[in-house]
Image 1 (cartoon, chains in turn brown, green):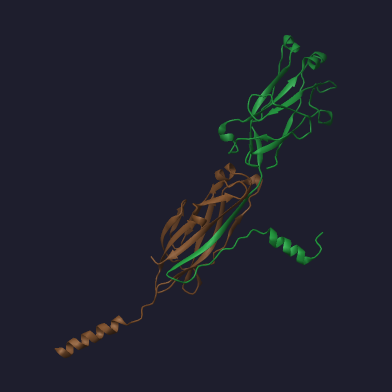
Image 2: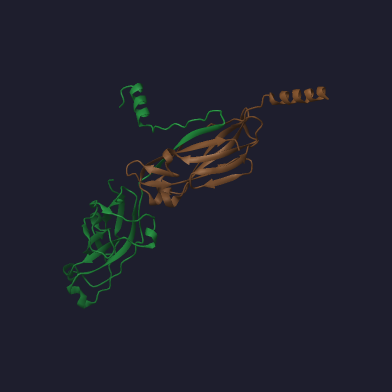
Length: 154
Length: 179
């Protein structure tokens, strides 16, 4: 009986030292967005960027949060006047889920796609949408802004 | 002319927007950034133009005869949304005249106002006006009107003209102002 207890104890210790694969994530292939619509054809501006999401440790999903740069909402700032222009974002996981957001915060948990872009990494699409009405209501000139895209384990 | 390719490259780099996306690191949480740059072009538009038909009675020829048209002018130029107007008639040398289709013409004057109701600034044919301001934040002025033009025939030119039907075309060219 004493021998049997010792075996169980030894097994438990062995299990406790098995190295676990650390779950890590990475966002890659981000690009800047730039647009200069023509005056005669002002319409909705839609800009897309194919990004790459790496998930390791056997994960098949990730959590996504998108914020405006410098703590701003989803707005672009007119460099001359300081007036703002709103925009919205759409995240398409390319795995059957697409979510739109018009304010910063968590976008959701997404499954990885089957479109590989690197080792343990899969494609997704980030889209920026600026409504025609907002552009027309704004002023001519240069608007700037930015996004922080955060990926984490679900 | 640029003196050297190096100078041209330096100028090009200086003019380029300072943008640079950053990639995330492999970690428990990974954060990347992307810049957004939108360059909105200058745009102006005049709509709600309408024809003017004047049928004065004989007794009316002792006073000015004219009418105004309220229009919508959109501009996105500068915080005051400024624009200019250049008017031209279809008479000789773009004169503001109406014609009987033969040899007789009658001169008229044109005024433009950046509010409704007519009156405003007298325009000279083919001469760009001083700047006007628009309050429109939509191409259609939100369904309203915010400017007007007015044509006027003086008693002197009316009394000097033969009876009959005269017509002409007035063109208003709206251009971006200086922000």
